[in-house]
Amino acid sequence: MAFLVDSNIIIYSYNTEYAYLRDIIVSPSCSISEISRVEVLGYHGLKNDEEEYFQDIFNYVPVIFPSQPIFDQAIELRKQYNLKLGDSLIAATALINGLTIYTRNLIDFAKVEGLKSVNPILIKTGQ
Image 1: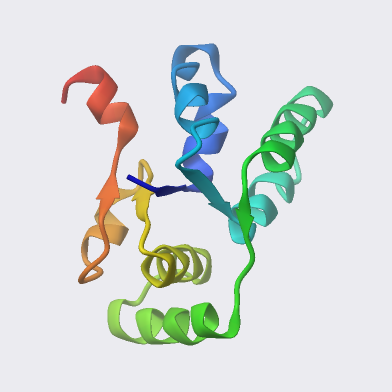
Image 2: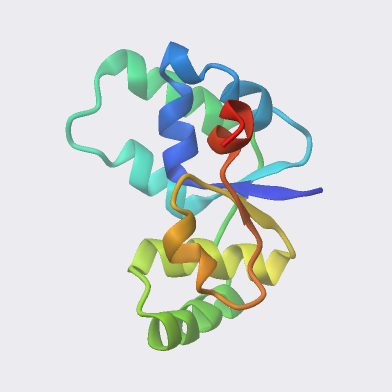
């Protein structure tokens, strides 16, 4: 199953407690939205070692850039489900590309009809 990893999973993967997420991120089935790259690397409090770790991920994993159809879909999702801008673009990227979203933010994405989302942290912990 091909999937899109949300920003929060990338961020959690930095912590040793969630090191198992790194195997998910380097999977050949994994993609990342360019929006997640902006969200993660654009954080003002990022430390040098964190930035280097995250940059390595974005250099390794295929990154999907928003296209006009993704932006159009994101507009509709924002109107219909009142999603934040980043979430609407990530959800639209997943829908347009037929991908499941791996995220810790199931609540916001669950309301989007036709969008599949999975919390890999809950799967690992058996919740």
